[in-house]
Image (cartoon, rainbow, N blue to C red):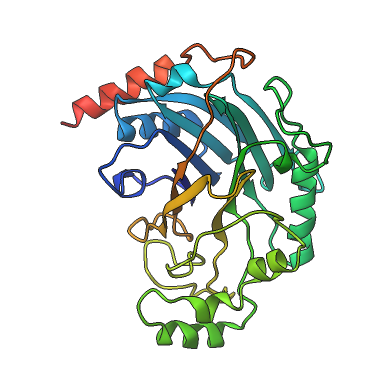
Length: 314
């Protein structure tokens, strides 16, 4: 399961992290413009997920966070983690745009997770950010690379790749026309909006996300709301409602990733974005002796604090 949202975290994360009763093996949570206290955020996640999950990895780039929880039993079959980052700001000490990359194997299948916040403005800025990220994430280094690839693109070196975050692609229509289209939507058919989506256009013409797929979007635009409401931007800027928040995936083998659900979480209104999540079923290969395992390592302090808080609320 992969989750993304911006700014201060809500007090109740169950609607977002626990949308169904079935057990998930891995949670990957990406945040852009997150709360300043990353450790408090990690404790909140642990508290929500409960004692059957452990914090396997957490990293940050400024206010960009990438946090991974795994089922406790599965933790023994995961490799050591490799992680790195790329900033796409002109001045690299301003860490508000860029990407975090995390790589590891589960049994014998390698995974790469990328959480990114691309620049606002002209489409060519985001295309350049994409290229900077794919060429700048130097992974893997320890994990055995089983894919014969000399390409600069990091996404070609792993069995399964998931890329998510605020990609900042807009609808190429003016506010008035988008509002008119929103009023005419029936059910979950968003095709009238998505035909104006800049990301789909750039993806279809080969400018970005080559080989990546995205499940059909059947939820309303996730950007930009007046905070705490279901009303799209009423400020003087009148931002255009858009699908800026996305989850895309890529697999070396066709059919080895199946989308179970792709949706937004409209009940969480602490940001001007609505969180987006995907639930995936992924085929994996058996393990091998040359993969350096993590040995069941996890953050025990986060675990104890989170579970204690969960117990105090019962």
